[in-house]
Length: 147
Image (cartoon, rainbow, N blue to C red; front, side):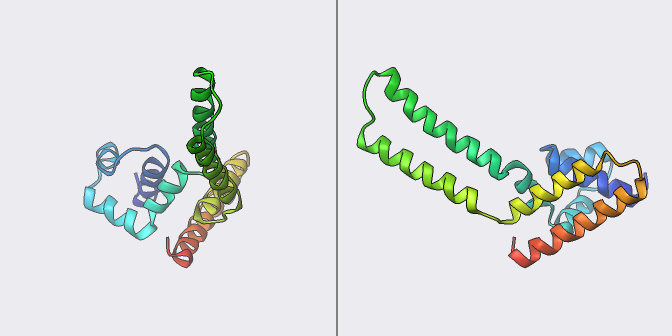
């Protein structure tokens, strides 16, 4: 496999599958140092975090916390106490803040969704160009935001 193709596959395995550095290196038969260099140069750790902590996922987890609080009180057949009410208010504010945030995670989410949408295209050269532009955009954005 050519180095550029190997690097692309490594990036997908590392940032989208949850595999650890060592697992990716073994799977591709590359040196761990090479992979570490690619990860650092391409800011793949930020992309990986963004992929697992999309706003939608965070909001879903916050809603689950609210539901847990409500279900405990319901199962005990009692009204919410002040601490639970305060907790729900804080979780609600966190959801609102998440909805307003346009941080690096949002950029990664939109860029990834665009690339997924474009995969329906049959023009391979277009897809490769789009993927390269997406990667360059995310790297530049990460640097600009200090991610």
